[in-house]
Image: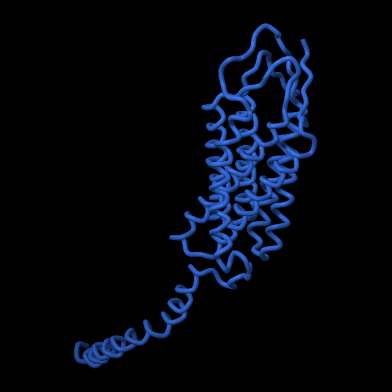
Length: 292
């Protein structure tokens, strides 16, 4: 039997809070990615890892806050703990791969396309893996076309956000990019939910798994605490707040005087042995008439 699906049990409260969480994670992650482009290579992995974890935690928290308002008529919904937190790990790892590609190869061309594609696939994988962790007395089916649309939205949103992070145009630029990214990620979530159809069996109550209310506590204690810590790091970094470009990356500055001074110092000792080598040539010329 067809089950009635309601994704807005609490009205607009859960969509708005979910959108704000996606924006917060996106803003912190994009600022960390921008910051990584201005530091030496020794500091770059740390900033990129922090940005990846912020984006992954933000979209994961967004997903399950939105799922607070998801109900199915005639059957309660529970969640498998292992599958739920596995979706968090998948989000952080796949987003991290895309962010590291852009952080080291630049936000343009093939690197941007590859990084945005992997990041978008990570967002979509997190969503559908989290949906696979649902436990209910019924069967979930999806409309393939709508699922494909949701994946394309995730990939386009991730590519646009990574491109904006690579522009290094200041704090307001990153805030605008995070708002767009939050809107696209939230839109991807509800597009994927629109592809869902539930066929309820009506035979028993699923006894395994935790209820949505039971999942709210670890979500607030874990990922939200991490996002708060990342926000503190961003706030106390002056370059992250002002967003003023450094003009020349830090890692290139030591190389500039080295290349410019090399032509002045190296050729000087090279001329001295050249003067000494001319003397044997003169003796050879003077000996040639005698040999004849």
